[in-house]
Length: 222
Image 1: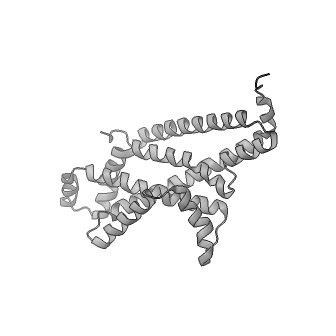
Image 2: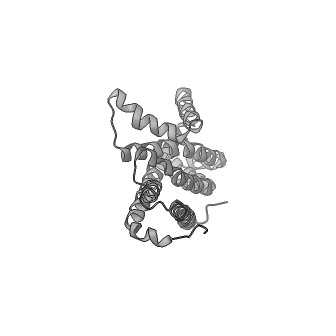
Image 3: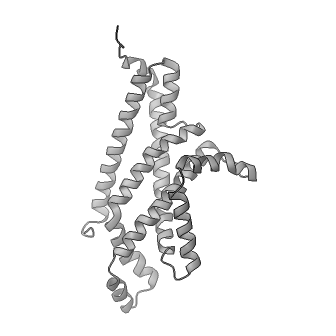
């Protein structure tokens, strides 16, 4: 006889499924909010007049973008306790996601800042606006509008990459899948459902952020 599908065996684990989904979305939301804020600050710093600031930002971006996320997370969770800094699995996962996303967002936002015509900056300053006001009110909104789709894409990638936090026992969606299949031995059904769950979450996240972007940047996007 062939393999008999039995999705009913997963029903009793719906509570675990929703718990894992909440952890995945919570980590993604936290990393997105903090990572975007730090990304804006880092992008601004990468345009600093001080060469040591620019080089520091460049080094950070290259370091994070050219090393695997899972290694960064292992370093935080397993390596830092050796120097006296011990974090819980959830704290380590959140910190790793923030550090990783920030590096990518620095580059994305920096590209957006460079795409804003310099004449607008100069015109605003000639009107007596402070440099911080020019950046926050004129340059930054246009820059974010220019690169918003790329930011949305990177946030979605971060959500999908968060699946590896299960490797340090964070009870996210992937960890829940491992737990369920270890109890019911229905690997095909379990991982099929989890795969579809990630697909739905990714599509919904993109559409939700795209909808938010249309409201935030109405009339600003090119």
